[in-house]
Amino acid sequence: MDAVTYPNKAVIEFINSNMIAVRVRHDQRPLAEDFKVKWTPTLITLDMDGTERHRTVGFLPPEELIPSLMSGIGKAHLERGEFAKAIPRFEMLVSKYPKSGAAPEAVFFLGVARFQSTQDPKFLKKAYDQLAAQYPQSEWTTRASPYSTIK
Amino acid sequence: MKKSSLLVALAVFCATALVAVSSQAQKQEASEIQWLTDMGTALQRAKSENKPILLDFFNPN
Image 1 (tube, each protein chain N blue to C red):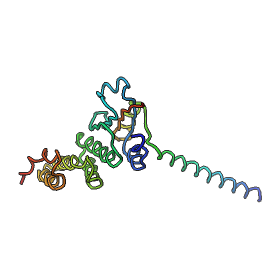
Image 2 (image 1 turned 180 degrees about the vertical axis):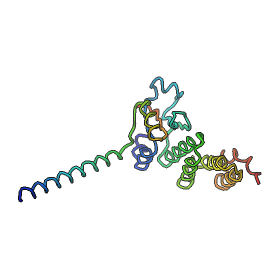
Image 3 (image 1 turned 30 degrees about the vertical axis):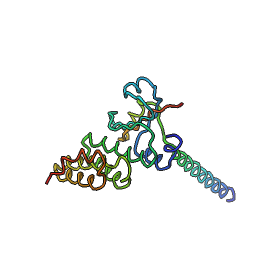
């Protein structure tokens, strides 16, 4: 992370303007025990109250880290019921980083966020259709498959 | 008269130098991630700036 990803200009700009960044040793007590850290790097997105919303383990290049963090921020807002803030995060992730590992999950949660904010189930069906078309092999397509029958 | 224009010139020079220094400081600020090392401070800032936290557990070795 220190050799490739963290010195990357886009990564620096994204983290500095969107998040509060904290870095601690993997054996720092009691934090490492509280978060049950077993391997490094472990990257966790917490919401403004300190609740964990997203976690990755292992190296991520810049073009994977930025969408992964976007997903973390989106999920932090979604789980707090802040749909108007969650939706643009997932939309940007999907449009700017469609080939990233985080994209299929973002399509799924974009559907969930749109459904929860409108109660209109067509957004779940749309999410499934997009997943099946763009990411047929993704586990998120399987997870969304019950929505395929929504009319 | 000469003295006052010299003073004005000096003031302009100082102001320009200050701007140059501060913009350089801003550039330096953006050249790396602004990592905190204390979770308590991070939580306070997360609340006051309404931003989520990125918590990185790393192995320095």
